[in-house]
Length: 418
Image (cartoon, rainbow, N blue to C red; front, side, top):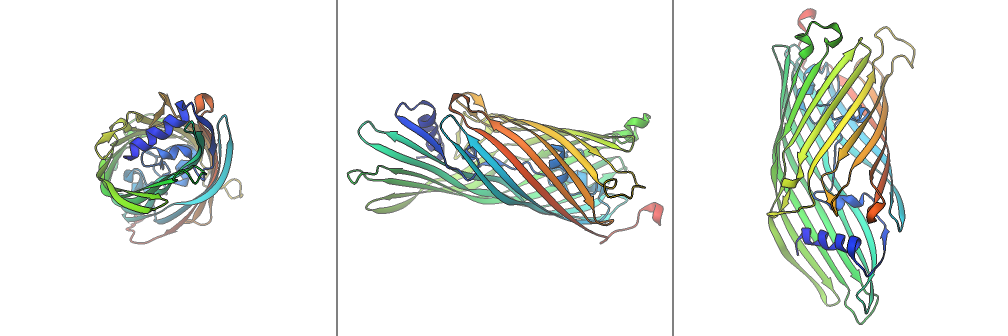
């Protein structure tokens, strides 16, 4: 039986089954990570995270792992290590579950070879998605009660390497190669608690491997305008190619008389293209405002040649404000950079015709340690889904930190310093 059929049967139990007694949440992560390749990772840096955006058009001395074109303003070699610790509260009409866990959000390096031309190389290791759910359903066949536990765990990650360059000092471009890999394991265990019935344990294992590319461009429109208030205006675009991940699905069927492993499917998991657009401006050298939108048509997502009608186009939009300290500031609170923002996301799947959407607010600060080193902190509160119509409401509280190590490696001096 294919993975899609498992999902359909499972949701049919939850949403329409007349013989389900209750649904109990026992998950260590998001129950919604049952869909597709799991919970998608939209983290691009702790700076952009605190602003609620992806940073499609946001320059600065930081490493953005979505749009390589943002790196042309990097003024030193920068190593960024980021981590997250979060709390998740899941609830429906029957039960409630609370968990907490931490994750490394990625390690990224930006190496400028030529500041004048914005020639920068980027390297990184970043998570792409996370699957981590466990739900127990109490039901009856009419003659015998049973407990069904449906669970999944795994992740996808990517290794990336890219280059950026600035054309005519007004157009920044970037191109990046990515190699994705990972494994997802699923289990469907039915326990009848009766020696007259045979318990069934069915496991699915998915292995993924594939390459894809990303490309971006940022136009510094402010340099073409005569309006002083728009002198720092920039408009950015990013494109991530769709890709077909080589995948195998092995079914491990366990029963009272032993176990049997068979290859259920072998082929590809098709991930759709993604597009992003953003706009950024700095007002009075004090207030940076940035917003962007990321689109990905998941109705084109397929597993082993089968399209799931539950998937749809996802839209994620964010808007953030950054308060920049004055260059002559000396007091501790005056040298900090303050950030606040929010986002809204139309989810990439529907349940019973209803989109599972998300929204949240975020804030953060940057603490400079020296000219080239700093620490970023961010906090997030967000909500996904709702408890109506047998759905699940998830509330997230996340604390994020990033350490940025900078050094003057490989740099040619700017023309004005020569």
